[in-house]
Length: 195
Image 1: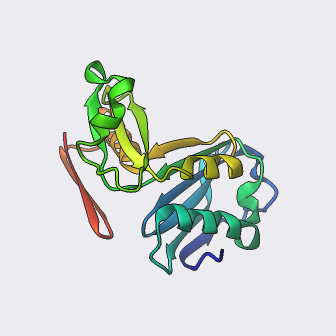
Image 2: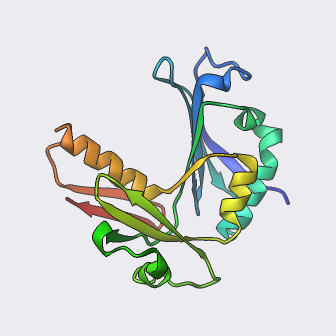
């Protein structure tokens, strides 16, 4: 299955040499509109590569990701190299935040229904957000976690909004920002965070 996509940004450090990924951290974001990935050299604390692309066709996210995974050897074979760590964030509309003292794993399907319709029988996932002391519940296409695991064994999988919330909480606690309202715009969506 071909993966119709276009690269909208590709920046690589002159010191990046494919085959030297052992000390690097790969971060990938997958969204209904496209994908992005970066490689961070954890020894030096600097990015070696940034890449962003858009899907050229509108299809279900799991189909797009399956096609993208199949196209990696032709476009970015170094993404499958062994490395220190791989983090994957997936954006799907609707993240339900549940305070940890109200969370019960046996109810997560019903709790996720507050912000999500289970059209297509998505798989319910729960990410713990320690900075917020809450769980973020969301739906993923059922095959997506196993497809990612088969290509990126041992990766960490999170919802993009949870990653954003945890990062903002760290910045606020370190007094990096003096504001308490954040807008994060995405194509077709926006996220409003009021702290």
